[in-house]
Length: 406
Length: 211
Image (cartoon, rainbow over all chains, first blue to last red; front, side, top):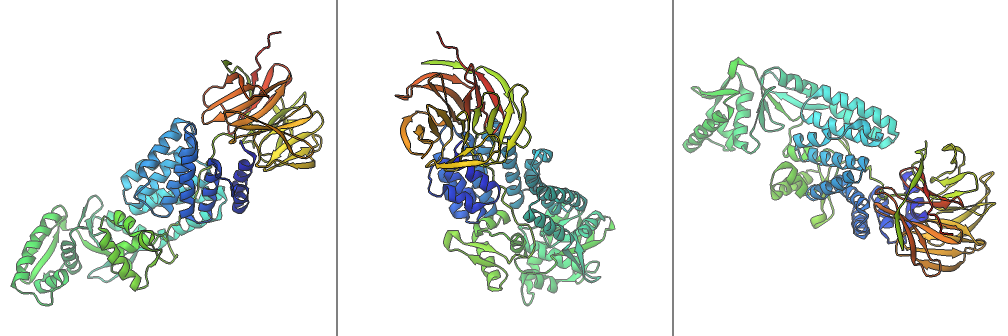
């Protein structure tokens, strides 16, 4: 509706960020602020972009609800890329409702898609799947469709469904080709490498072997009782019991699993689970208690029997037992798994994603930083953590056009 | 002040490769409209785009009987309608939304500043300024009457204002969700309205004058 704004928006759409900024740099009205915010986000200055978009949302008049919702949407996307996971959920939902009410179908779908990706990142797979399922990918433009399918790939990988992941990846590749954005094509290729890379390591009596995602899927479907040291859980194809909050029980289970089908001596168990140098009588008493607890947790999968030396795992229905560990055994593998996507995280966002306390996560990050595996930048509340960019998903910004009307 | 609901006579479009309709003008036979990187020539009898010029066309469009005037960024280009060639350029400080030709001068609507400037078509100098209480989109003159479009959020109107005082004399309200970007008259009983991001051009009835 305004020639300078229209020209700036046209420059922005054509990827001419500086051209867009030039046309609105000196203006502080709402559409100019929104365009400046989006240009800054594309240039990677997320902090400045957020401030500008916040100001723009405030400056749009009460009748310009759609424009304000689009600013909130852009802000939410920037928050997602900068892994600021704690804040945007409510605002995003309100913005989506506004966009839907005013018939801005495309941006409403974008909002759902962002919510799905946020839920995926914080590990709420069911909710993420529901949010994404509410979007019909056929109605999306190619760039957004690529991101949508990549989120589906992410869910399928987390759920260890190789076929589904491959199908979604093929659709993502097609959409990225249609979108003709090199960054998106690169993301699809990265996702493909993730699918082909070792996902886990089989350990135990018969030696070690690296597993791809499809091997993991096959192992889980084989009926074996899988002791999963990647997720601190015991699972078979149908059931999963998490021991993520019971590290001592899991350490005992893993030791028993690695010894299976043989038993394991009490002293060895005490050493591996309690980190004691020598087992005394109180350790043995504690071992009996912990074994009782573990037996209760394991009920559908296996039993634990006392032997002359110690204890042995006896799986139900004579099924085999397998111990699956991360491909490379490291301390704080859980923290690294999140950072491996190459984006920066705040320790509070990581704590939210991992369900751990912020102090625990900070300690882990400091240890990892000392080992050169992660890098911090920024100070105080603005401090972010990242790994050197090698593998994993990056996020391409697909910001909405902020302006209503013509 | 009279208020009535706009009577939409006809809807043209959407057209291929047109996402946005900005300025609209009329040369006596064809409707011209700006769509960002094109000036399109629409035959209102058939509803087809008969040809177009590839020129930057961000907002308002006007016709002085011989040449077209087109707002882009912070300037106004004078364009030969036959070839699409840019003949001259004058500044439009701060840019603008709507553009109209009347009485040998150009009239430039400024959206967020809620005002209309009368400017010298040779130099771009502002001759005088009319304030409105709404955001101004398209501007047009017909039979000595100054009309302009407004569009805020979901609400849009075509308004007849007193050019001396800015007082609103008459309002035509568009249905909810139907916006007016460019505005032009056919000199008789119709207004042509740009539909912004709907990609459409609409013809609405101009209220009859008591004789």
